[in-house]
Image (tube, rainbow, N blue to C red):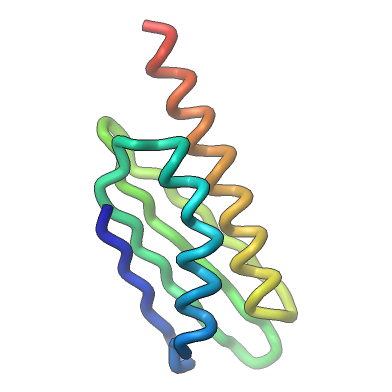
Amino acid sequence: MNLTISGHHMDVTPAIRQHVEGKLEPIERHGDHITRIEVTLIVEKNLHKAEANLHVAGADLFASSESDDMYAAIDALAAKLDRQVIKHKEKHRGH
């Protein structure tokens, strides 16, 4: 799996990069067919956004999250992506 983390109006520190990688680790276990994840971290005034594009076999999944804290936004983003990957996996398992 190829993970790309970029920042918009912010620098991606090693601590933030490690936090993102740690939160996306369980998603890798659910979806062994994930080819690429692109995470964009955005700061606009007092609002922190985390967005991700996840490329899996047969679909592209997108999730975004907003919070006052970047770490909280990353946590919410990881939870949303996890639910989407599980749902996508169950859809394709039924056929």
